[in-house]
Length: 183
Image (cartoon, rainbow, N blue to C red; front, top):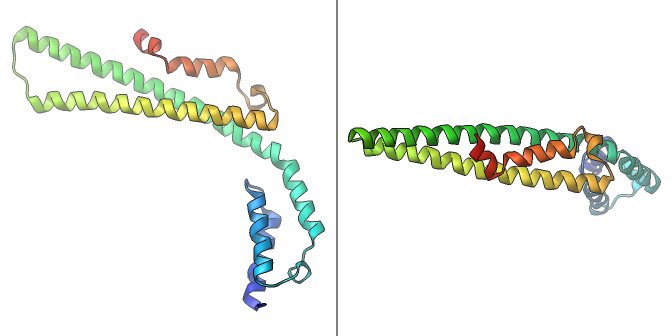
């Protein structure tokens, strides 16, 4: 049933669609079409046509590589950030573990008794950081997969988004056990 409110809302959807430049254009277009149908309107009543909708879709498709290139660059930045956070966590784990080992060695040497709560707290801290490391590894590999998928989909190279295989390999090297041993 045609209502003034339905017409207004559908026109709002059209204006939104005309200005839309994000992901999921097809979903927005589908919602607009459903609004037209549900309110028993014609494209002419709303102020558009099939031709205009097709032209909007074509403009959106042509702009996709540029839009996606920015999103891919954000993924590269996220990889860099995750790798740096991981590196800092590794350093923290190593220092915490060395500190704890030193304390336990001193305790054994001097036969001093330590508060069990303090010792448990130190062990929990090391365990927490180890869990954070695992989380950062998963985040890194998920982001790397998304980056490679997006590059393939858009037929872009790593150099197009400001990185290279060597940089990605340096991040991956941070996540290896051998790196932990060298710190």
